[in-house]
Length: 277
Ligand SMILES: Nc1ncnc2c1ncn2[C@@H]1O[C@H](COP(=O)(O)OP(=O)(O)OP(=O)(O)O)[C@@H](O)[C@H]1O
Ligand SMILES: [Mg+2]
Figure 1 (tube, helix red, strand yellow):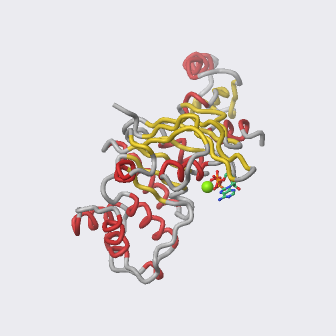
Figure 2: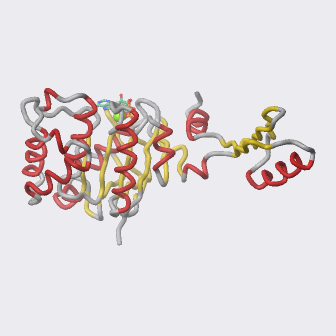
């Protein structure tokens, strides 16, 4: 069976600007992949190419085996654009209804209610977009992307306007989508969120993939920190496997141990190192 998203040697040129350079990226069913990179790295260009909104200058993109932009590919994906704006005079429910019409979803009122509940807008179904906060509009955008139960969800910075509770709700939503077998490509600058939920991350810099892998494999151990009655002791270079020995030696030496922490670099450290910041 083909992958849900396949980019092979994908390149995109805007005039003299090479925005994507021979990018290979695949997403399997149910995979949650974070697409990271500094401003201008080519993340939105990659997403638009997967939607068929941009024609690649080289290479190929397909969704569930169908060429990006074809009717078959479009019927399989949901997209939340980076800079979207819904008509201010429509209610939340009318926005979803509009997108049901555009994507020929037959889900009707039941799908509208389920999607609005899923993003916490069940009570706000009659509220007009103009009267919504930015966070509410962003959650409505996520609901809109899920119309028609796509196999692949492309989310371009879905949590940038959300407060901490809203960000957590989106993380939980992403995990529940993965359980249902929906694949998600998540473009985000919120590295701690990405680290918490993504199976894999792909880091783009200047249109090229410079790092990719599971967050846990990209970060490096930084040592072990032990809190005792005499203060906090740091054992640099030690790993999780060294922790029991360190603790038993401290206890044997008469120390009282209150806490042990295995230190690792964060995805943010890996990111900053990779982009040369
Ligand atoms: N329509 C366009 N015409 C010309 N250049 C463009 C166009 N769209 C994007 N670019 C350029 O292509 C590069 C990649 O842009 P893109 O929007 O894909 O980056 P991004 O990674 O999404 O950045 P951000 O994090 O700021 O959203 C940038 O240098 C941008 O200026
Ligand atoms: Mg972008």
